[in-house]
Length: 130
Image 1: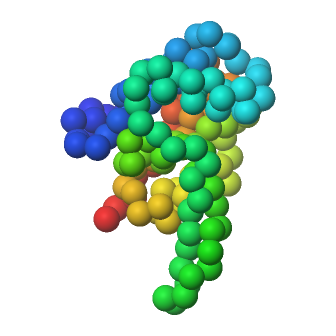
Image 2: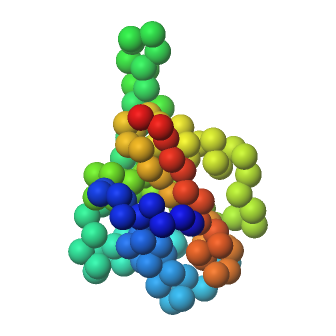
């Protein structure tokens, strides 16, 4: 991960710190739902603002398509956070996370795979150009 983290509105360092703590306590091999629930607790304990299960809407040629995806977390109204617990991330995982970031109108996303140890090696940064 590069050190562009000084950008205003980039909470990557804080989010990854919370993920490290979750994996330290829970380890690997649990279902995704366990990591999501624990991450929710950890973010709240660290007083990091977030929303859960945020609907993401899309438009096609100026017409609303409605909600087409759900972001697992939106952190501090600036970072889309997607959580997985899989052997390996697929192109589909990455494309879904990138679409959620793009459609959310935000410029940064993190896709974290909790079944990679240490979890920092399972963090994928997703940037969307303005």
